[in-house]
Length: 78
Image (cartoon, rainbow, N blue to C red):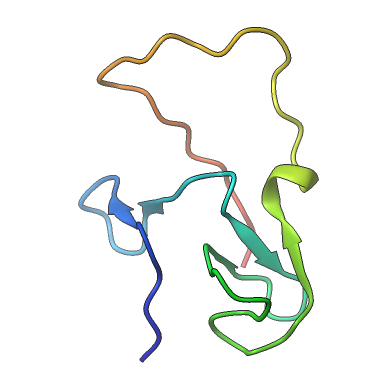
């Protein structure tokens, strides 16, 4: 079993987690997102990783003020 780092449960729904966007990596081979610290995918060992932050459009302007309800769920097709 391989472990992912700094993952927090967002809700009690299975398989719904949150991770730091700056560390989120998308594997172009298996289409899974992880926050691996290595140069290889945590799931399939491929080296075809792309930073998620480079793929999605982030809003421009000042960052929002922190709140207890902060968080955004981004849909990704598996």
